[in-house]
Length: 404
Image (spheres, rainbow, N blue to C red):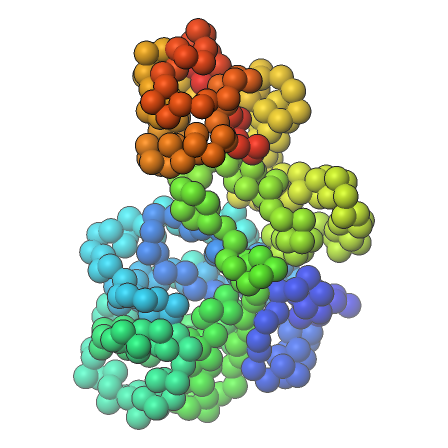
């Protein structure tokens, strides 16, 4: 008999909160369960924060359960107020449709659309955009408690600065999603990040009130450092799954350099490596932990972009930091030896602005080949006479630069 997927997820550290745990455990261990995980298309790419719910969905599917991936083309028009200090920027229907199309291939990296428990992708715009508001209020308004909604964590921050009526409708719309998926697909479980607990719980409660049927909710851990800060942020912003926004090499380098205390948790949540092997990889707290970090970086890039990109990123990192520049990440820029070092750094995209480049130079963190840059107004010719050189930014970024 197949092991209960709840136990698998629990051992790897995924499960954060559930409702009716014993009943949910029994259900997941006795038959195939249709579940859903939702993502609002608020950008033209998913980011690393979406990774853990997708991994949860992937592991559940591998254990025989059927995933529904809901893309929030409708709810994105309202905007989730969770963990927000301000209202989300309104997007046009055309922009949302464009984002949905771009996100779809990224979702397909995690779940299979073949076999008995093949995944399906649905867009809640298909029903929310056709919903008659008066009919919705008459049919379902009595089942939605305003008092209960106002106590939800997702509204607390917004209530302090002003919660719009537009945002207030987000939770009822997401609850209605669960109802439609239950009626149309037999969906009995919603999963998602723990920051979505209030919205997910509202959906399960909505079905119990309207249909008097039991459905379930389960949230997963967020990607955080040991001190509770969110992981996945760089100087350029979020870590995106789109290679044009975050390159495979940048993704590799991020996870190659996670903190020693975070690497084991990342291996459990972001890879399929068996727990015994993870324990062996993380058994040492000295320099040998770097082998665990390299494995983590490789597996993450492999899952997002494929094996060839993972191998290329690994080779580039080895070339950049373990000797040789043959396979080092390379960039060609329209600059000359007369160009200022600040403009060269911005052109290479190792810095977002001249100000950031200036601060790095003042802090002694920039080298051209092996020569430290010590003058913020210096020109490239002050440090090299070659049109190909290695730009060093701190200890973690080495880039081969070619002047066109």
